[in-house]
Length: 312
Image (tube, rainbow, N blue to C red; front, side, top):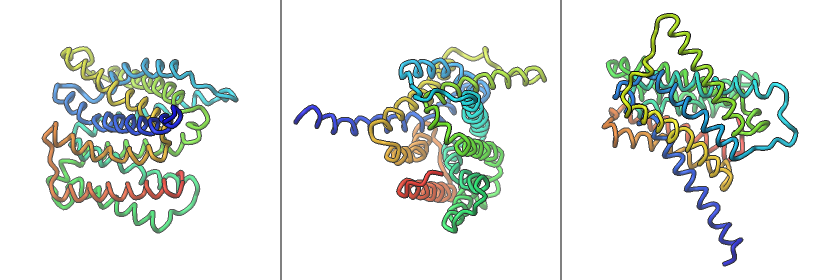
């Protein structure tokens, strides 16, 4: 077998392995964060340290890859990338981290999976075009699944998940808005440059947020944590943020975006498995039905989009 033939075999295999590891790392995010909360960390502090450790690493990635732009970066692209980063890396995760403090990692991951629902709605508003009947039925099915995942007719369970679910659904909506608004920007300046600029802007926004809260008398513990917790902050930044980005990027280069998206659909299942294995979390039967409904409907929507080559 020639070297060229070996390369054709090893390249897709390596891409699949990279994507699988990246998906596992990203799916473990909620588990690491739950551990940080159990050790006394506040959601704001987790996000702050995640950004402080991730920002320089994203610039290292930028330097290593040295992404080129044949036509040069257009005026205003940097500011648009920074604005997109504030939504994607600051506002959306801030809402998610706050919500995760009130619900299980299993429920949080399923709620986050609802973002295609918001993408459909935002895209319809942007294009001033009604969604298809098939999409409307899918949206209704997802909303019903979310209702069951939060407890359904079990009022006590539903009430316990209510506050956290509001924050996480808002996080999902913000992320969907980011996808709709920044889609063309990814193609214009590339994901590496977009992430470097965006994470830096998000870090600045986080510092401003901390400063405003401190000014109005809401102090956030930053330097009063045990040393082990700072190590956990590093792991959250590196293992669940930077490493998945690099591995998924390398995986996409080897097997393409469509196959990469298909593999990444395993993320919610992995989070549920990790939640049961490492946190001892359990879903009530009605929640399991709801989570299954959301997973299969959203997976079906994403698969249909990939199969038809439709890019919302």
